[in-house]
Image (cartoon, rainbow, N blue to C red; front, side, top):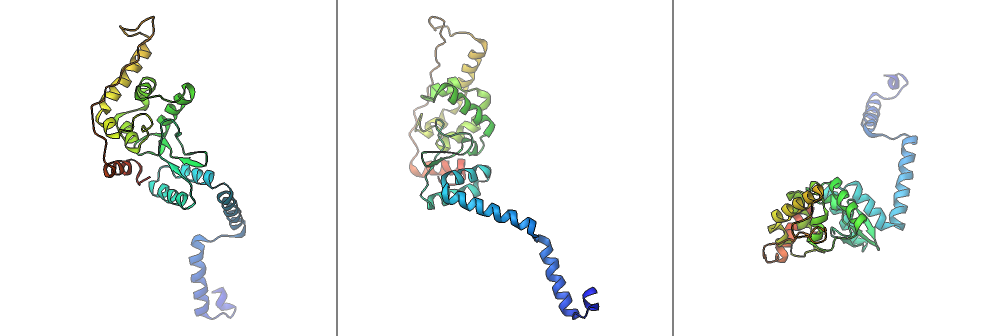
Length: 231
């Protein structure tokens, strides 16, 4: 009404107000637009000059979104940046970088809790890398590893450095968890095994069922189940 009173054509006034109304749904004033411009400049600078760290940080931000993670992985490939598969001895609970590559986060594997992976990484950092599956089982607290999380870590290839036969690890998942619980119970009771000598607790041995490794197509399918894309 005020525009019409000031001599603006009614049709023009209605058209202008419809445009303003639509714009008001998501309109920036200057003090809002300026910080956006600054952030856009800063992130562009970081990506141009520190692309590995920038993409790792971006992946960490969207750690629970496999669709976004796949987009970042594709961008890393476009830039010639390697994204390493989850590795129980080199990956952290969150995305990390080392020697120009991005290491996939253990906590980003499906059905695996980031907090539990932080506890496992803390054990590794305190007492050194795991030497084999038996060493892993004897050192990890079973509260941080259930059957589902173990199986998905195996599918993702996190244990390849300890045992590259992922099919065998899945077939022996129950044995792994049973041994892990027994080792933890022994530590909690501070008792030594019957056959230990000199008061030293005997390390429990893991016996996995003889199993043929997966052919490549099965390996890829399991990896897709664990990560949401083919890494």
